[in-house]
Structures are given as C-alpha cells and as structure tokens.
Amino acid sequence: MPAVKGELRTDKQFRNGAYGENYMPSTPLLELARFNLIDDVVIGDEFGVLRKLLKGYVDHDMEPTYPGWSVELEKRMSHKLCAIKFPSEVVRTMRSFHYAPCWSGPELHTFLYHASMAVLKDKIEQQAYQHFTLYYCAMTLLSSKAYKKHWQYAGKLLEKFVQQFDGVYKTQLTNTVHNLLHFTPEVIKFGPSTRYAFQSKLQLIRGIAYTVQKPLEKVVRKLVEESALEAVPKNPDDEYDESIQPEYPRIVVSQEEGTVLQVNENFMLQRGVRDGWFLTKENLIVYYTSATVQDGIIMVQGRPMVKQSPAFSYPCSSAIIHNFKASAADLSGNVISVKLHDIKCKLAAAITNKQRTDIYFTPVLQTLGHDTIKLEAYLKSLADEKKKQPHQAAAAPK
Image (cartoon, rainbow, N blue to C red):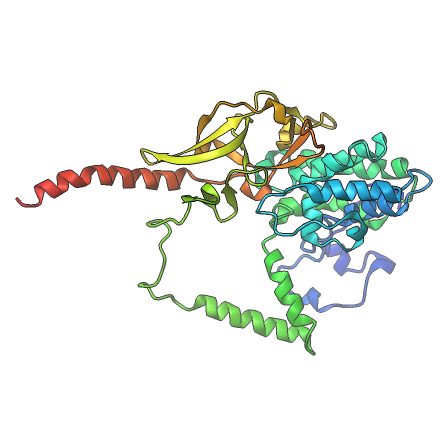
C-alpha cells in the first residue's frame, strides 16, 4: 500500500457500486435510515499499530532493519515495566513483554499512555524511538477533549508517522498502519479515542451475540428491553439528587491510608508513589500529603518539584500533553497549599531506575478536565449556612 493519501470515498458512490471489486454484496445496512456506510463505521484502530511494533521489538519481526531484543534484555525490560506502580485508576496489572501478544486493551492502554516513552527509551534505535514519538503524541492528543484544539495537529502527526513508516522499518505499509489516517476524523466525529460512547456496551453485546442462534435478533430484543427499563419513572422519594447532596469531592481520614481525597469516582489522591502525584494548572508537579476544608474550599497540601522539564522535545514539547521528567532529589521539603479547582490532573509516575533520577510523569487521562467548581460552591454554601445557624437558633424563641 504505497499511497498514503488518496481520494476519499463517499457513501453515495459506495451505494452506487463505484468501487468495483471492493464492493461487497448487498447488506441490510443499506436500509438503515440516516446511516452513512463510510463515515459512520469506525475503522481506525487505536492499538493495532502498537501491537505490530511490540511484535517487532520483542519477536525479531523487523530484522534486519532493527534486531529484536535478546532474551536477557526482554527480561530486564519486563522487570522495569512490572515494577512501575500505576495509579489506582489503572484497573489491569501489567504482564511481562513475553505476554505482549496477549495483552488486553487496558494493558495496551496502560503501556502506551503511561509506560512506553519511559521503558522504550534507549532500548530501541533512536530513529525508531523518534518515529514512535509521533504516534504517541498523536494518540495522546486524541485521547481527551482537553486537547481538542490540537486534534488537527494530531492528524498531521499521524500522517507523518504513516508516511515515514516504510522508510524507518523498510517494510511495506499495511492496512493496520494506513488506517491511522482515518483516526482523527473519527475522533472529531465520535469523540476521544478512550471515550467512545458505545465502548462500554460492546462486551455486553458480544456476549449476547456469540452465545445464541440468530444473534442480531437477540441483540435487538435485549437492547429494547434495557431501553424500556431505563424509561420506567423512578420513585421521587428514592431518587438521589446530586445537585443537593453531591457525593464528591470528599475527604476520608483513616489510620492506614491517612487523608484520602476522592475528587470524583475516577480521581483519587492519597500519599504514596501510586496515587500521590498531581499537576497544577500552572504545570507544577506536586506530591500529595493531605487535604483540608477551609471556608468551604478544599485545600490540597503537597510538596512541589523545584525542578522539572519536558520529557522530550520532538515532534513538539511534551509539555503540551503534560508529560514531564524530574528527579526525586528535586522534590521540595516544603509544603504548599493548592485549591482543588487549581489542580489540572492526576499524574502517573514511571520510575525507571533505583536512584529515581529519571521519573517520567504522564497525565491520568480520565482526570483531565474534572469540574469541581460547582461542587466547591455547594460546600461553601453549606459553610455559610452553618455560620448562620447560631443566629437563627437565638431568634427562634421570639
């Protein structure tokens, strides 16, 4: 597949059979109302290229361009990967590179966004590493609405990655790589790559479809049943009004874990390498120590990094995607206080050596763009009401 870009196909031409041998026999999808057979079908694969590259690195699949890892190197790499303490929001424990062909989607997600740049550095050829950085930056930018203004730029990075692929690896361009060209338009249409609205339903649908005869009819009936259940009115007495009594943010104090700040269901801070790092809106890395409530405002205490730098500079400064590098020796002993709504996101820390001189920080994507201002306003209103209560109690006997 030598051509990187060609004329875009259209739904109208596809329905008219304009693509010759690429046109399949008639399908019931043609009868769906308001369904575009070209634009409404997702073909961009977030991790297909990553699987291909890992297979090349580990299994010598790209020789003689780049020799694969030796058995000893693979063991050292696996030890470094499995030693990383990923945040609690990462629900899947990483397995060694020996099992890379069997890695699940969550494992690939964790490796790409929180470990790849730190683990692969100096372990693959410099040209291959810089080429991989194009892919990494683009996929990170397309993973969150927080980077929406950079989505078009991410598309250009993917184009460059695809254009350079056969030159870097001396191999023919495959569909897996070429399909990355469709990824940016699909994110613009359907949303960030890690937040497709339909993703959480796929496992349920597959489970139904693979276990019965006539799977399509079964899936339709099941979805209709679920829709009917969701439409049943709830008992007003049992309904939980989040605007009146929000569950988050909340501070929990325990003897074992200390003061834990639960910002929301996908964002938790507590002391320790795993869950103790966050980034302020001023791009300052801070190690969490505690949290308090002052006049209805949640104040987060922590020790800042006195020295930090972007993790890399090609093809752009990694600060754009909130990737930084620092040393444990540069962690200040002084404690500062930060308002909760001045925190940008939680950080994952990949420590790559025993001396902790190279700590790679990456954003925990689901914590980007968290909105706590409304919740803090509610907490402040509670504090104001509490201040008024003594006066109201004194006035009651009248």
